[in-house]
Image 1 (tube, rainbow, N blue to C red):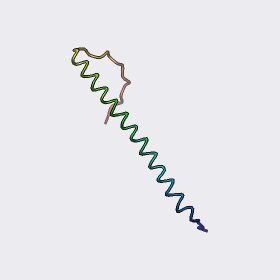
Image 2 (tube, helix red, strand yellow):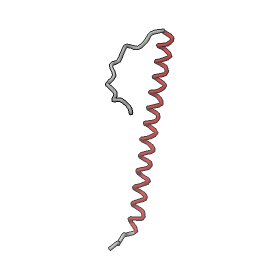
Image 3 (cartoon, rainbow, N blue to C red):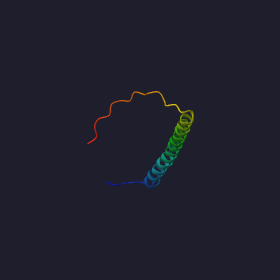
Image 4 (tube, rainbow, N blue to C red):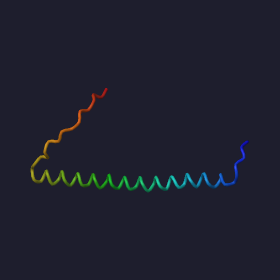
Length: 67
C-alpha cells in the first residue's frame, strides 16, 4: 500500500531545496528593490525640502475606517 521507492527520499527534499533557493533569490531581489525605492524617496524628499516646495496633491483612494 505504501510502496515508496528510494526516489522519493531524493526527489522530495531536492524539490524542497530547489523551492527554498528560488524563494531566497526572489526575496533578496524584492528586498533590494524595496531598499532602492526607499532611498529614492528619501532623496526626493530631501531635494524638495532643500527647494522649499511641496509635491503636487495626489488624489488617494478612500480608506475604510479602521476599528
